Structures are given as structure tokens and as C-alpha cells.
Length: 298
Ligand SMILES: [Zn+2]
Image (tube, rainbow, N blue to C red; front, side):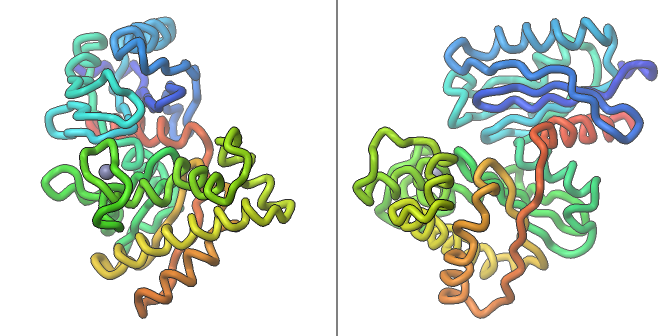
């Protein structure tokens, strides 16, 4: 089934863009960034993916795909995604196998990002590490001695641990989930609650304001950081990691919230603070997906 002359492809399907590329020896070449249009459903996006890959490689050697959402890796199914509302219980692995007739593996996008970070040495291959992506939602990965721990399949869904019993309702069906307090939408909510311009809904703009000393923006980041610290303390109690690595869209604002997070963390647990930010490039998830796919044929 695997063609030795084909390429190892990686696909990162996000809520706004889908990135495609392949491995060239140990580097990654990004081929295309396709707009993801959640409302048109999965089939049209898959058709565009097929066209892009087939133009370059008529017989891929392997395909790995990372996708933002809850993934049943064993059965190759995207169970649900906060951004891709029409993709409920979508059999992505089977669809890609039927399209390309090669080995295919799919996983959550935080896990594919982690695979790349382990491969590049940014996350150590010994000890217990946690990767947490802060962005539209919160993604999580548990890495033990360089291997991702899945438990029965979904270990690392830190974004949906409850931090406020009767708190904000979450699209997952629960309420008070961590990602309702420490992801992009929450930051915007805190900013609005200070009485600021309700049209300002872009975290990057709030960060710009905070950097110029805007008190409301700084206040929003303070509350945001405290909730980040609450979650990190919970995770340290449960898992005692040797390192916690933050990544994702909001990591660029690390300096604006991390001291608040640290203060809250120290208030809630006596353990060593070992949190750092990972630098990331936009195609890191697609590269990790390709590395994951390549492992299928080795
Ligand atoms: Zn939730």
C-alpha cells in the first residue's frame, strides 16, 4: 500500500486555515495554505486537499493529519471540533485512505505539534512534560520519555477540566471548563468587562493596548493569567511534570500574563514553577503530522 518513491505528507486542519506540506529528508516543505470554510463541511475541503497533493505526488507514501478537536485516533474519527461544526463523527482517516491509497494516521492538532517539538528537541525526550496550547481553545498533550500518553484515547484534554463548578457553559456540554477562562474568548470577555470598547474582539489588539500601558487591557491580562495559573496548579497536583511548555496563538502574549499565572500557581501549590513558552512556526502542526505519518511506514 505504501509507495517508497512517494512523499510523507502532513496536513494541519485548523478552524481558519489548512496547511499542507511534505518532509524533505528531515526538513519540512510547506506546499499550500488553504482557507478552511467550516460552513461548507468537510467534503469540499477534502477535494481541495486531494487536488493540491495530486498535483505534486500521484502516490503519497504516507499521510498524517492533525485536526483541532476531539479525535478518536484508534478508529480515525474526528468526534467533534469547536470550530468545524459540520464535522461531527467524521471518518477522516477512511476518507483519506480512499482518496490516496496509502497509510494514514490522524490525531489532535496539539499532539501533532508535540510530535514536532519532541523531534526537534524543544520538548525533552526524558521525564514527564506537558504541552499546553492556548488559543481559540486549550489543547493539551502529556509526554513521557518522548512518547505521547493517550490513556484510553483522549488523555490531555486539559481545556475541559472543570475550574468553576457552576461557571460558563462550554460547547462540549459541560460548564466551567478551563478553556472558558484561559483561552482567547475569555481574554476578550475580561477586557469588555472593564468597560472597554465592546467592538474590540481581537486578542492581538488587546495585547497591543496592554503593551502601551492601557490599564483595562492590563487588567484583562491579569485576570487571564490568574486563570492560567489555576489550571497549571491543578495539572501540577495531578501529574507532577518536570516541565510545562506553553504554545498556541496566545503564547505571543506570554510576557503579559505569565507573572500573574505564576503568582496564582504559587498561591495554590508548593511545587517548583517550571513553565516556559515554546517558539512556534505556523507549519509546526503539519510537520508533526507528517512525522507521525512517516512512522507508520518505518
Ligand atoms: Zn468544555
